[in-house]
Image (cartoon, rainbow, N blue to C red):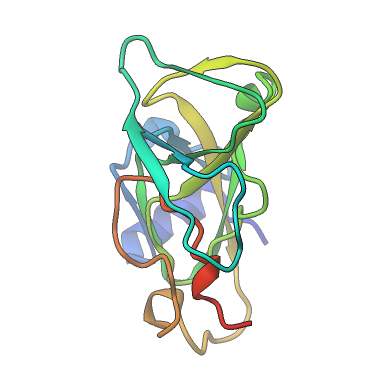
Length: 179
């Protein structure tokens, strides 16, 4: 079940959903619009290795000129909004207007976990060059109700890799997995 605007507001009032900053005009019928933060990042190495720490270079986009994303490059972006979800599963999807510009905002990581508390790192790719700007609408959060009790919230998991609050994109922490 997807939460409606009224249910999202009720969960915000209960403290089960936190969105900072919150803007009532961003609340849709059954979603909340999030915006592109001012930082982007790219990986330093041309070949990434799932077993090692792949380092990134973070840079700030110029507010007025924006930044032109290029095809064939994976950009890590970040949402302006910090969010918490303590009783629902948040899903981040691209806005249709963004998709119609040929921008994908996530390769596979569109689902959060109950207990996720942070900004969202975006895995951005484009089909042709496109200029983006900090603060532009980039995606929408959709909240799904869960059935049953949660045994371990994400922010309390000993092996959670993305708990440190940040306003910058975070690189893959796959190398921390045991496999």
